[in-house]
Image (cartoon, rainbow, N blue to C red; front, side, top):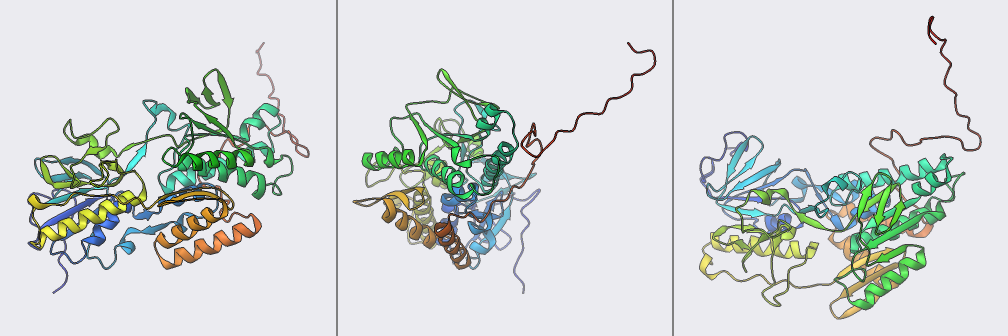
Amino acid sequence: MGRSRTAYHRGMGTGTITATGRKRIVIVGAGFGGVECAKALKGVDADVVVIDKRNHFTFQPLLYQVATASLSPAEIAHPIRQVLRGTGCRVVMGRVAGVDLDRKCIRIGEGSLSYDTLVLAAGATHAYFGHEEWAPLAPGLKTVDDATELRRRLLLAFESAEYEADDDARRACLTFAIVGGGPTGVELAGAIKEVAAKTLQKDYQNIDTGTTRVILIQGGDRLLKGFPEELSARAKRDLERMGVDVRLGTYAQDVTEGGVRLGDEFVSARNVFWAAGVKASKVTASLPEGLTDASGRIDVGPDLSLPGHPEVFAIGDIASAHSAKTGEPVPGVAQGAMQSGAFVGKLIKRELQGRSTVEHRPAFSYADKGQMAVIGRSKAVAQLGPFKLGGFVAWLAWSVIHIVFLVGYRNRMKVLISWGWNWLINSRDALLITGDVRATIKRVEAPGYERDEPEQQPAEAGSA
């Protein structure tokens, strides 16, 4: 007999027993946490359903390299069905609109899907601290679509500057303001400066791309707040040596089409990129009051389940969790999501196999394996356990670790070759402008170009 099939669409989910007569485990989100949870459930006697609004898993730590044209999207993303091949999971591409804890179902599309166990791993999105109107003006970096949009805006800025006659407008085209001094902001700032100063200089005739201005805006008193102070200071020093204008203790007061206001100063910038904060996925808005914090993250218990709902778990960026070992908050990084995902998957599997019970669940402990941030070519900072590294050694460690954790052997080889080639000749392999390229150039008056004058229309009879 063939494998039984179940439709996950309109009208589905009136009961908790599936067509196979087994319990159903639903995982919402196929990021680091969701994927690790699904892998840990391999071989379990239950129907495991993984739902994501996209069909691909994204290696988020390398999104900035797509945004700055070092890598193409296919090198850091992999189809979810291939990632989970062999696990026995069913993959559904759909957008989860909400969760009904009382009915034990989720709303997906125009219908609902019931569950016996639910794992929320939907991740986080950009937080603009009450200024959602800034979102289209200052895009962030969380998805492949975000990365290609940033790349489009980055490269269009140089195209616009090449044939912009007005000096002030040209300087604005070549000015990039990045709000947020965490790893994403630091990596973006360094990469943009390198693209401008080293990669593109021979590609344009009318502008000196080396004069590109990159401003990194950080509200706190240092960059990379979660890193040791000496590494934060080194990151700042290296960025400034590269020519990045680092502004500490500075907040974005307003973002407009023309730039960003920093206190009494208005910085004219063609592009403002956002790396200042995150908030939980919108799916948490459907949960009862009192279960989430100010940023929408779910307050979970020691076993990562929701209070009063031991059948529902939250992992990764969507959860506000604390490590049982240290009492410290679990950071919103890939390692935190991966460890919590594996923990929940193994916990569910043990309970289904009768090797554990809800009353005897262990508490989750996060093992901090270190943190890293790349600043530029052969420049990085890293904390690996008791070791604090900087410069080329940190950059090499960062490269090796990220290659190891990339999904798929082919992706690892492609990224390794791209990085090696780029490192040798300061090249970028993905200098492609995609999407809407209209209104790139307002005025063309550069040498060798003439502006067409509008044709004079004859006056109509009787007109003044």
